[in-house]
Length: 546
Image: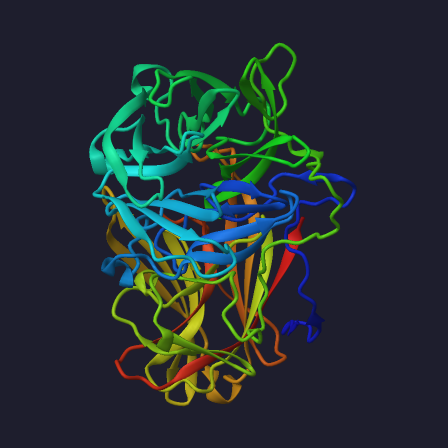
């Protein structure tokens, strides 16, 4: 719980977004958060899902569910991104679309880094420590890998390509893999070229086998406006025929993009996939799946169609036994758990000296600010959890020294933040906006603007509240930005003690490079070797609409 400084009341942290309707049905999305490029498996009664994480660390969030509707983040596959360059944020690079598989008692997570190669991690206990990543295909260009083990003991890897790194797109490759998953064998074979048909931008392949057919599920047509395609062949290296199995149709689910086929112990088939909703990122949907003439249909097919369309509400999967566990990923935090909550990720590979957990909150040490705010590695962030919400951060800034600052940030390609700078016997609130100007792959430069606010006496620094609010203000088109995507406005307010909130500023939300907007906290210093810190007592999220 945390005080609402405007009213003096104590607000209880509750559900922010939950898909379980409590009546045997669920609503989409099952996760209104940026768990992009999802892949999932079932092992017994347990479902595990992984998602991309780009330059944020720890990386590769692992989520768990018993019913495909209620999910919790239970682990991260990697503590840090495996390359020295990620000691600082490299926006849009790092860990792209992963896959997760289970084979002979071992869990495998295979993930691409488009500039560095294809990596593999393993674990016998997914809730425990995963192995350090092994680069099984060094070099740039390949993305979206998925391993597959056949009945004869042979193993394979299917992958897509990134035009920005390799010079062409819309091509899927297959290559034999060592049975232990730790290396590749022989030369890759091009199994499909979307440039030669109507499947441009085909990517995100996931491989399966059913009734003697090899299947590769792969979206095409682009993240924002595409569809789901499935390839099939009786031979692992093809030739493959293809069919579109899900389109947006009349639904509000644009894309719908890559994901995972999973089944239940009762024999039902389901498909998890993402939808790009602009500022909030790539949110996760669950669709029923059926079969017709050995082709899947994802979603519900209208009369006369041989493909499905996404559903917005449907009955929950029959997982073979009842479950009354209704849950969602954590958001609010009072930092008393003894370790950093799994909702948090840093803007780059973290250092232990950045923070410490105390009995009264999280101590954020002042880290030397050597760059613009958006490129600070020590931004502590979490994903937006709902279409509209507020987040109140309670901070004790009485331990800042001259030249140090701390505050709350909204991080995207364009970003905004409210910082409190210590100077003499005053705290100076400053609202900052930043805009990243991108080149082909990385930002060329960032422009920041500042707006100063009325100073606060240091005596009020012990109890500062910052209220971060996200509201929808309209819509925009997928292409011309006039309609279609939601437009979200971020507003920041602040208060001292039990005083009323004062507006600091507002900004239109813009997603990051392939990621949704994140919000969080930071503490910085103009000098090296600073000894001051901010104490983050709590963050409390509340849904504004569900």
